[in-house]
Length: 446
Ligand code: FCB
Image 1: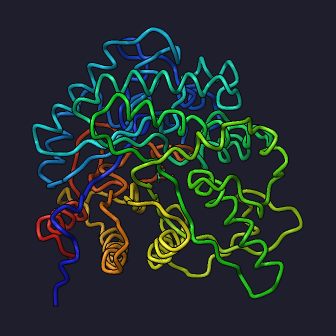
Image 2 (image 1 turned 90 degrees about the vertical axis):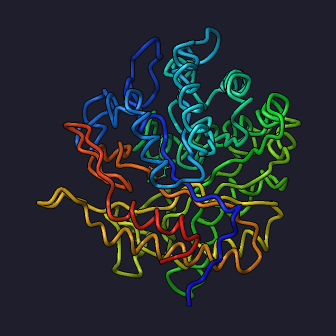
């Protein structure tokens, strides 16, 4: 029996981010971002690639919008590049940058595709980094200025806003592990970044609400079910601590509960950054919680807990994607059951879900990405279950519309529904694209 779990109002989408697809890193007045600087520093990116050109979306956006329309997308999630709009992070506006997003938004609306704008997907203006970046409280004000400019200019047409993408990753992978820009290695910096990002989110919510009539505003977190490797007390504690780090540090303050107690970092540092009124600001009412889901985390105890210490991560199942991430579809339902039970968010979107596989064009010029279809199918089954259980999940965005620049891995990891030949920029829809098109058309899993 075919299931038809997706109501007509459910949004099927695909997602991208500015640095990963746009290119044009110094085009038409754009300022330098921390990712430009990071990628131009030898040794930072695995295959020495950069996002200088990426998918050249800045020039090929019309072709990309046409591909979205053929796919039948209800919605498209993309991010705005802060230094393309405010090259110095604050102050002078780069009109050419605004004009690009104006055209893109109009192009989407012409095709009946709803734009979901993410304000910050990690490409901080380098000039702000030179003043301390997210470790400096003044960056919160700069973000509010940026959010004000973008929402005043696009808010007549864009109603769906995501303030931040995955503050966990910006804070801990960018500032503690240093695998991402700006490449710091400091617990203090990671925790200051955490607090200032969340404060920037909270402070920008009322600005967006003021500028945009009928706005729907949320934030996107990457969430992981956190499991213990065994029933031992130490492993159970490790799992709780990682739940504190990966999930609760970012969910609890948004829900008005302040920062969690059981965490693997020095809580005193985080608490010392909180000024009167901060926690109230962070808890500004939002319209939806955005969830990125890729895998779970299975932990065992270690003398010194670290953010991503492989010795502490156990792969329970053999099936992994090209990122080495365990494929664990049922974690999606588990996560939403928990969100629905433990928090009172009124609405949800899955703002990213997808898998990297080493795709290749076959002799007929096609990409038969059967594993990706299987990944999506099994995760959409979980989406169906979430909806059938009455949890208010209103949309699903596949990561990603097209192969792109995968951060520290450069161009070597392919997540797209569309294959990109990075030499010629030719776009080839993969099997998963045609499969997803039929899912969207039939509003059922095939
Ligand atoms: C998420 C990021 C996104 C992409 C996917 C694979 O953490 O938000 O930009 O890199 O992972």
